[in-house]
Image (cartoon, rainbow, N blue to C red):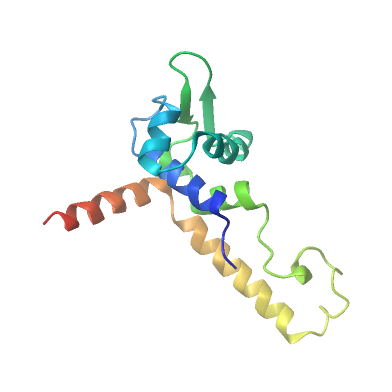
Length: 143
């Protein structure tokens, strides 16, 4: 499974917003410039995040985007789910009875375990930690 480009860019945009002062409105052009995202694509990828209450937007002069939640309250799982929808990995996990073999298939349990563990890992990484780690990584490059 490879996440979509939209999800990758959404993560980058949220990471950029997480590094700004809490509640500060960030111009679209600044996010686009620093994250190398086109304005139209940025608007498209932020729409699901606005709908989920992760990002806010302000129109007009001085308008832009801001985080509605503190960076430590936003996880990678939140962004991935907003952009991609529920994570299933396999059709058999979409609903009980989605696969006629799930009651005896030995792989069904494995898919379920992989899904749960992947979601747990994505859920433990919040954007405050990620922003801090990015700063550490950048600082180590300049030494």
